[in-house]
Image 1 (cartoon, rainbow, N blue to C red):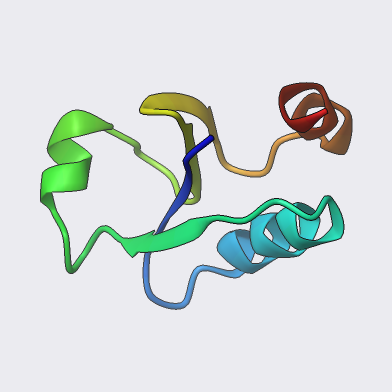
Image 2 (cartoon, rainbow, N blue to C red):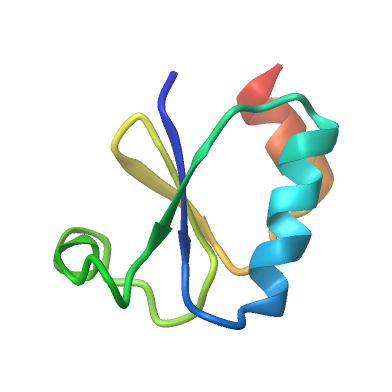
Length: 73
């Protein structure tokens, strides 16, 4: 399973999502969309973070922990 967190510089909500994923033991890659704008073409997020799992945008913003657990359990 490939997990990517789409971030922007200084994104405090991104840190919250990273912490949630860490608590669940999920390995992920951080993608700064200001450095890789091609990700915005593929995943047009209007708010960060974006959570991409196996090439599919699952959430934008901070998801509920229960929803994360459903995906990663």
